[in-house]
Length: 323
Ligand code: UT7
Image (cartoon, rainbow, N blue to C red):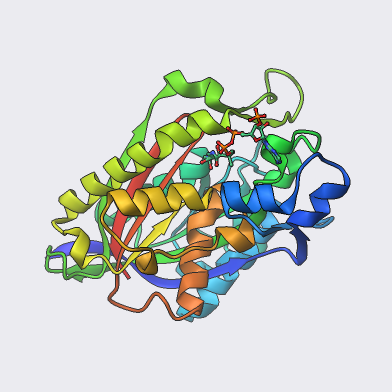
């Protein structure tokens, strides 16, 4: 028997304020056509006053608990992937713990920017397979609207806010790819690429700072690294592309999503795409896409899913799981 980390609930939260591409035309030298054709983004959600990473994460986690029919105290640990925690410390995860009314266990943040959810899911899996936790809430939540330079058209039109959550539970499997749950993971980073995507503020500057990105350089790395990490994870899981029901990629750019699917020999009708409605929500994008894909009726119990993401660091990785 093999212990597997199986998804038993999922949920998401999107702030109610929706901003269409055309709204940026009033303040920036940009237009709907450029944003749509270069990125695939049509609209994004932005947090309103009082909505923070921790409040959105709490809403997503509560939805995942409701989906599983469990209470907060049934969970052993919360891992929250975010680069936009409410405060420098404590972790946003401990704020979620309090907001959920969870009076036991432990909570911590993981920061791997847009790849954060992949890193969080992989670490949650490690806690479960090593027997350190039976149920782990894995959340991706971001308020990138707080780190946008609204005068920089090359970045501020691309990002959005939101949160998604998966509740994982230890269950026994046979050790084969027919098992439900996380089947394999692959994590990578290369700190030499720091300047391609970073925030120019933090504790060392005494400011929050703004996101800076050399978009076309990140693009160059993205397709090759995403296809490579997904292939490695599939090999580790002992599966081929034909067995994959859904790729659920990080939602940064439709052209990266299409290029990666092509490299993996998977048609676009087996890819969950939400970038048009959410923009790039960094660590929230994959759990949002998983939850929306499930609600749309695309993702069903037993489906084989490959998730992959890349972001600042650079950091990138993939997880193969059977839903
Ligand atoms: O999630 C973390 C990882 N991040 C990503 O995966 C993002 C990866 N990169 C991308 O998605 C794309 O590179 C972008 C969407 C950011 C940009 O697309 P691109 O095709 O690589 O365009 P570019 O950066 O090479 O810019 C092309 C032109 C430039 O003008 P010139 O120099 O050719 O005259 C830009 O100044 O487009 C211009 N431009 C804009 N024009 C209208 C940049 N932003 C805008 C804009 N509206 N908002």
